[in-house]
Image (cartoon, rainbow, N blue to C red; front, side, top):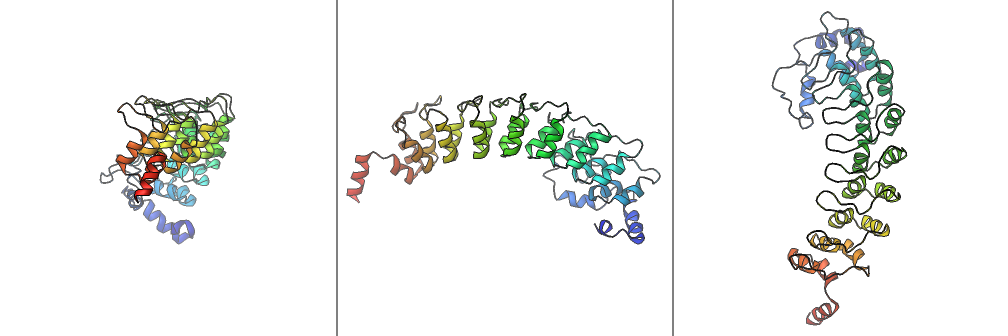
Length: 351
């Protein structure tokens, strides 16, 4: 980092002495070891190339990069222990000048995938580096719709991280905005899951995006938004006539059930306003009220009990009521809400 701040001749000499060492184990590896959970499956103890060019590209030291690429034997496309090339490191850290310098060299492979099948374009798109994305799309003609090993395109990564600027750039090209990954999850699914309202609006503004498309587990974008408590995204989706607010996932859990279990009162109210039946049971005979009571969600229980079309004494297939489940779990607040009026009065007099 000192080399980046001070590029005097002396600093360059010191930096080149370090970065030009082809022992392939420069100290930057130590920095990456702190992120072992991210580099899943990487053996940090196994000798593998992480040379000076990788390090200079990672930190964005353009003058050192320009010096190193001129050195005899420099492999500009060399992959390190993560499968990243110097271009990958520059792209995923937003170093535009380094990206330009590397792309200006003969023999550069701009679309070379890493261990996860991700190109430099995936790396830049998922981090919102619009300048780098423009360079990669313009100078090397990177494929804007190429999936990685998990079937995730640059647009998928941009949407999942709420990178609206990059999304707009990619959507101007010949990309499929509704392309699912290997789990059936589309860019809209993940934008909704992550709560990125602006990204959701961008995708819904397209005529070729299905707003109610489920993934392989039957989870729609609305389901994903509700599961994570993203009221803003849910409001956007519920405002559309082509979104089914009561669509269950593959094991029968509707958005209302998920909201009730998690205690998302606002989402429960939004779903009820949209016309979702509050007392429809699942295959086990359990209603939203039952699930809210079982999980001690007092706020949701209050919301549901205000409805005339909710039966607080409805039995599940095991013959248990919401009050039975709340009592079993010791949820005192819920028990008080569900207790019949005469029982509550009797309890008051006894006290």
